Image (cartoon, rainbow, N blue to C red):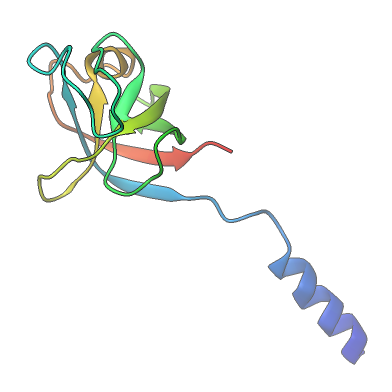
Length: 115
């Protein structure tokens, strides 16, 4: 019986791998930053599917879902930010357009690291 309980608890611990998920506000940046250097050293292109995140490593891909309309986009981290309280990610203009948030400016999102 003790072995069965031990096996059962181990299976629960080894279940699906934990996913990095955040909820918060997303904003976007575009033309005013187009052509400037990002924190990664890349040149920012508002037409690329990229984002700024405070701590995820450069090159990390994340799926961002607009909780208002359930539209999602996968973006690559190439910059740092946002530096406004409550915001968890800044998207490029192209990414913001894909999830239908341009007219709103700031929306509630779910951010999931893509493995």
